[in-house]
Image (cartoon, rainbow, N blue to C red):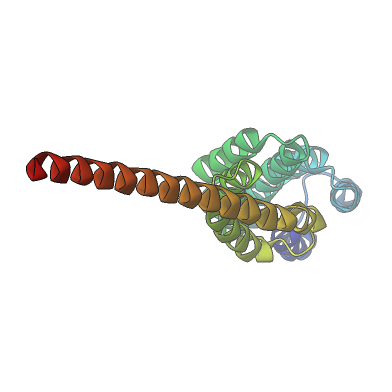
Length: 215
C-alpha cells in the first residue's frame, strides 16, 4: 500500500530540502540539516510518527513552506496506512477500513489512500465468498464461488494463502457432486417404486370394477 506515498514523500522532501537551503534560517542551518537527516532515517525505518514529529518541528522553523504542509499530509496518510496494515495482520478488516476512511476524510482522497480503500473493499468481498465456500450448499454453487474467488485474488498475487485456501476445497466439489448424484438416484428409485405401487393399485381398482360390472 505504501510505495506510492513513500515516493511522493521523497519527492516532496527533496523540494523541502533545496528550498530550505536557499533561505536564511532563524536558527543555525545545522538544526535544519539534523532534522532532515532524522526524518529520512525515520522514513527508512518506517517510523512515520517520529517522522511526522520532526516535520512539525521543521514547520516551526519555516511556517510558510507549502512543501512541508504537503509532506505533513503524506506522513499522516502513511501512519493511517500503516495502522490499516497492522489491523489486517490481526485479521481486523473493520479497523483497517476505519483507519483508511478516516484518513480520506481528514487528509483527502490521495490516490494511495483510495487504492488502499479499494483493496480493503476487495478483501471484504473475499471474506463473504470464503464463508460461502467454507459452508457450500451445492456443488454448482461451490464451483462458481471458487472460480469467483480465484478471479478476485489476482490483485493479491503475493498472497499464497488465498490460493491454498481454494486448492484445498477443489476436492469438495467432487464429493458434493457424488453425494448429489446418490441423492438423485435414491429419489428416482423411490419415485419409480411409488409409481409402480400407484399403477398396481390403479390396476387392482380397475379389475375390481370390471368384476362388479360383469356380475
